[in-house]
Length: 488
Image (cartoon, rainbow, N blue to C red; front, side, top):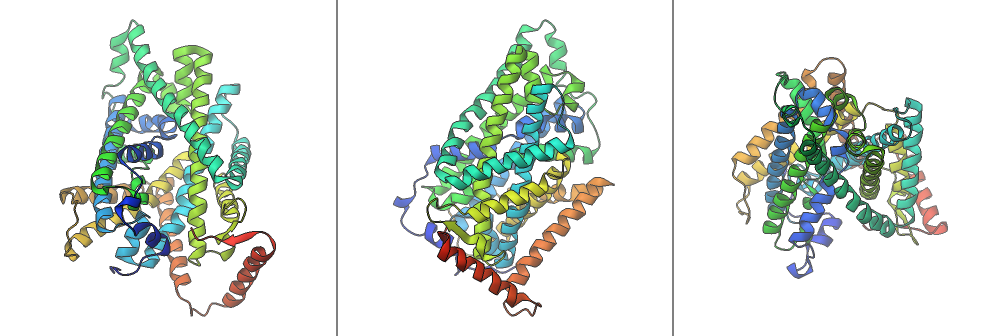
């Protein structure tokens, strides 16, 4: 490992300097940010996958609770990292400080080309399944799923390209319906139990009978739970802007993740109690099915509307975030420099937004949500694992003690869990093991790109011609088409 202490990227330097008076995010802002990033479409998508793997309602609720505790423990580790390495950027600056530019740049590419596009397509496919089940009571065909996903992402691309401000305003409005929909699911579950005469039989649906004892199936069910809590690291991205960061990040993460865990466990219990067992395991639209059973056709339409609001809010946010990551990758010379340009009027990185659309369109041809989730979890938690290890490394190599330190047992437990989570797919034969190998190959390929782009004098045939052509195209757009180089 290499510890880089003196060099910061321009992005981080700009946002991490200055007095504490320039820091705008207080405790309420922190709680709101984590809640908006964590409470997403996952709770409308993954409950059936979790129950199918766990084989019982009780075990699935335990998995949802355990995933919340893991997310909270991981956020504590990131709080200490934010105290040791102040500034915005999250994993990017943590990996850069400990492992160097190549690891940090590999993380950028992994997020830009794997993580955010994969999450986007999972949400798009699930929201389209909800619409199809609501309109014609059947799942969409493979062709329809691909076409509708591409159309949906294209519309979102246009919106994000026109105005980031308008897109952000829409996100704020849609987030309200997302939370209302989740609370409605919980209310439906409570109402259903209270009003039905056979309460004992309903409550028994959340016991542990028929629970699987296969640890591999349990971990695969856990994948869905962990994916739904993704967003627990949101504050690390803006840690340099949080006032009284050690206190507000800890308390903000603690309150937000506790509330999220309560909402998720209660919503999952409602699904299990209201839906018949076979429907719970096979449905691709559990929220709308719950609404239909609890309140009839109007309840189904209402839940479909809430799911669409949640999906749209999340996919817009992902398009905004990923386009900025791709812009950063272009500024680091990892991808052609044309993707570092933004339009002078809209101030949006149109080429990076278009690249995001193309990447997601390619993912749309993978119609197995379980496969995409497997790759997503392996890639995401690989980088989380590296950050947890860097915390242990920095604790024993740096003499400066930060204001906030977690008990050493917490990062050790989270490291052990991360290793098990990443390695579990390798123990499952056939398709899942193939997905594991594919994920490792993708990570190695992205690291290779980061390594090669860092070697300025590498004698690759045609390298200089390609670079010259890329620069010429970039300069032409700057001079003739109202574009400028992004400094974000």
